[in-house]
Image (cartoon, rainbow, N blue to C red; front, side):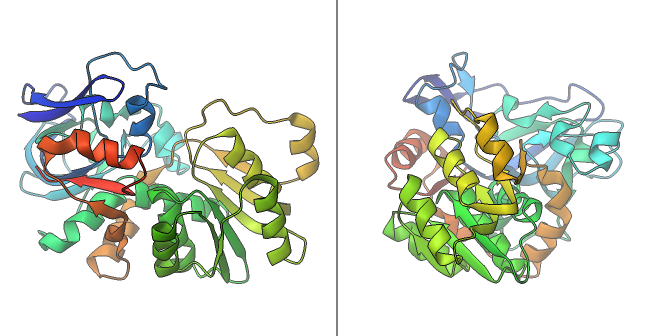
Length: 340
């Protein structure tokens, strides 16, 4: 099969790889119908993660089951499925508490490289969710989004208790931040402030439900949030970048008693204890438990209640994966969908 592999920073190639095979009786193999490139992949592309080279790329996927292990009961060959970027058994105490991404038996699906024609998914019964039937082609991108960026943005909105009467601020205008806006809107937030300096992303944020755009960053951005909220700060803030500046901005933009959910993979972030103590905000971070929300999100997409597919603004074939990374790195694209 063909699959994307990173060989060095800035060097992504599509190469022939061995087709995946069933390794454990709880595995499933899927033929990937749609795959995409993630902002978190850019850390590898830019050389920040010191990934062992060469490394298969990709952790977002949707497709059709072609083979299952002997212990798989909930998923059948021929099902169209979506799944989280972390495999989980969905039965351990951590999963039952709603944190499947930290399952006691979690495995990173991306280790197998989802930017490829086929993918092995461990712990299939606890990881994959079948759609009600074979989806129309135009629904496939949205179902793909559910596997990470939609599920991650949604988890942020849930964690910060976005809802009626609340003001939500989103720090970061990548795909996760934009879909956190969509999630806050769907959950009934009264006011949604998108922090963005890019006209095309501001436009998409407004389409997804943002009521205000704040272009300022740092202390100026915090001051603008306070100005918009009567000096208090937002009730709820979703951080979707992963830098020191974005984290500081998120915490300082939150009113006392408010909630911050940081979704961006933290790189070089340090939290000053005294400032955090006196901020008096609830702070939650970590990989999003996408599997918790997949049944709800798939149904919302299936019913055409939400349409997150607009975050995909570049759709080259798999063979042009490197151009997709380059476009995202240069901020010429929000998110690249690859066609197998």
